[in-house]
Length: 301
Image (cartoon, rainbow, N blue to C red; front, side):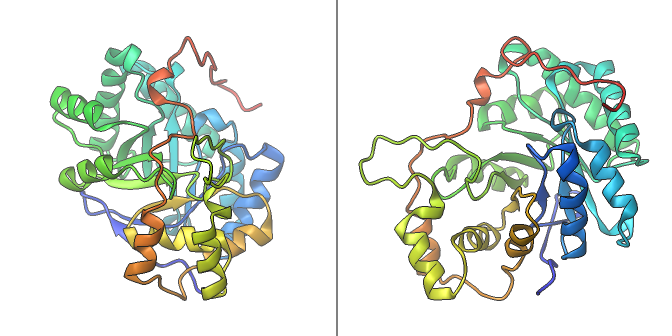
């Protein structure tokens, strides 16, 4: 097993592993074991969120692990119910209590909320304060498009270090990636292999997910790898950070075993060509506190 040593350097000089474990939809019961397995098999990035309701279990697994805290890059996210300047500071403190940590490596705004944009901007100002105070090593956003990034930066003068977005071979986000490159924002992909998403396409030959597309399947057979490993390798060679989710030990181990082969330029281009331009997750423009009324509890469940 090759260890996960490949990193990207954020615009503020902080190194972030390119491959990590996501715990979206991981139950509290499964999260401790999943994170423990990931750390034992070489993962050094764990991605959670207040809205996932498993921050406590991520922290518990880290405390149980023999891996030093300083060697693990921890990400969590502020949910929209806590947007607003003072509310954001309280939301951060709540996540720290649940994680059992004094600080984290990357703190993100979970959604842009264009329908409640002033609250979003206020929250971003609070994240800038948390970064300036050294309580988080980096700050960023999730699900922001180029236009919203431009307005956020124009309003605050502060550029996110990371934007975590839907990104996989069927939804390649070329224009947004160009914005990221111009602004030196790292691209991080949630659901990078498309495993938890609902794919919709009008094309009669479209595969239900990238994992079953013939291009990916043929490359997997050629390289002696699984389709998921091919897609994760595609992410890494593009320089994207990818955070695949699994609670199965065998799958967690499989997903990190992608550092011992390389896709050729032509193979990368073949996967690039699979983009449909069709979003399979929810449209971030539709997410606000009215459509998603979830509120985060102050105390662990």
